[in-house]
Image 1 (spheres, rainbow, N blue to C red):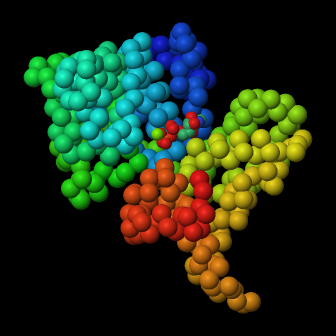
Image 2 (image 1 turned 60 degrees about the vertical axis):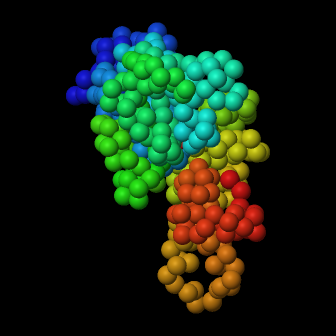
Length: 350
Ligand SMILES: Nc1ncnc2c1ncn2[C@@H]1O[C@H](COP(=O)(O)OP(=O)(O)O)[C@@H](O)[C@H]1O
Ligand SMILES: [Mg+2]
């Protein structure tokens, strides 16, 4: 059986082990992870095994699969849990600012740098630095991150000093870094440095066993949060539709759909009509197959069908990339401008 730190919160672990462990002083993220599928258990096992060491971990998976949640569980289960967990979203910070955000800067390092400032690396001292969307890290900064990983050394912007740090680095991405390496957008040496331990979160459609548990969990949490104590449960048809859906936006989309339904439900049960239309099977997987392969006896409206088909694939590409239009355009073999026009024309919304 997997070795666990002795102060590990095992709210999800098998009962027999739970008793042997001391509870943590504060609730950990591990308790928030719902699911019993084999793949999720394997992920949690890996987290347990590597939590104790300071090794670098790379978490991959489509947008909304729970990467962030896994990273906080990893931090909470590590000996560094009393230290900070500092997140930097490499895709959300403009390239010019990212370096100083990470490493800090000296006074006068650039226009507007009126005082010296510590970066997030320093803020993560004794804890974990979480580099989210690492696939978006510009090449120039990839070199500097490599130095940090190899030597635990860095220099603030405009500062010639070499500073040392004691941090654990964890990175996440929804990109396939091997492809990024092949296409020259990601340094191979950095990829190997990050990929010491690889944790992959499979998309929700590959762990259908978790869908019902998650849906019921979100139902309870949302009903509670929205003060809907009049809601008694989820109807079998609604649950059926939820289970049949492919969930291209993964757990995040499931959470949103259930929240949407809880807010709108007439009650006392949450019914299929309360679910967003795309979940009700209107855009289900069966339709897709029929659209592709067979012309129905009665014929079809070709233009409407193609429109609908296009919309669905565009929506999936957007969901899968967290609405990153550059990436979505790449996935669809379109240029960005064309994609943006299509989104507008088809009124596609998240
Ligand atoms: N297994 C899970 N159990 C409970 N909630 C989950 C699970 N996986 C993801 N979530 C929730 O789904 C949402 C998206 O997860 P997040 O970790 O932000 O995904 P990612 O970083 O991969 O895009 C969050 O609100 C998160 O709490
Ligand atoms: Mg995320």
